[in-house]
Image 1 (cartoon, rainbow, N blue to C red):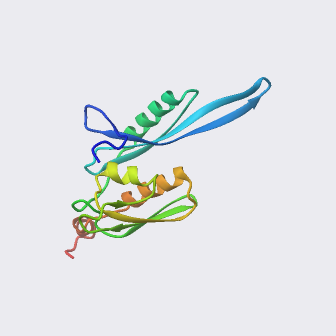
Image 2: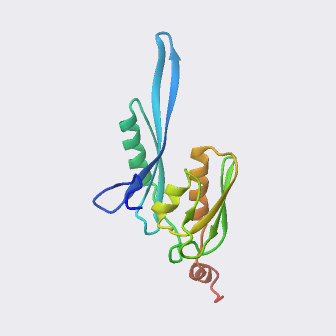
Image 3: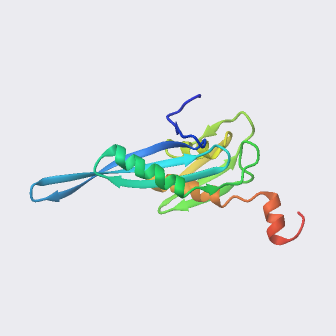
Length: 163
């Protein structure tokens, strides 16, 4: 599991291309193709971002999406190699449930959710996707679920009580 298609930079932020999509504009002379890229970027220590980029060529679209993902990075609450509690995330018609798992379980997730969880630094988790299986919406739903996580300490600080 050394390298699973992740690109790394000097700051330790890795990125993974979740998908490249082609769209066409029909014009008088034929079709003009454009490419869209969806990229996840993270440092495997609780920071994760998803970016989207469009361009006439694939490498340029991926480059833009990677830049966007690094710009949109958010901090995620983790407990060891898993998440602190069960959580559900939604985006569009896609929803996903993330369930904490015991050490050694690994990441039980689909093709578009797995890189998001790996780049966030999660090692053990169970997932279940509901509704639409759209790549963009599933990965964004996973990010929404991760952002809504709270540790016990964070809840105590917010409420001003000890649990």
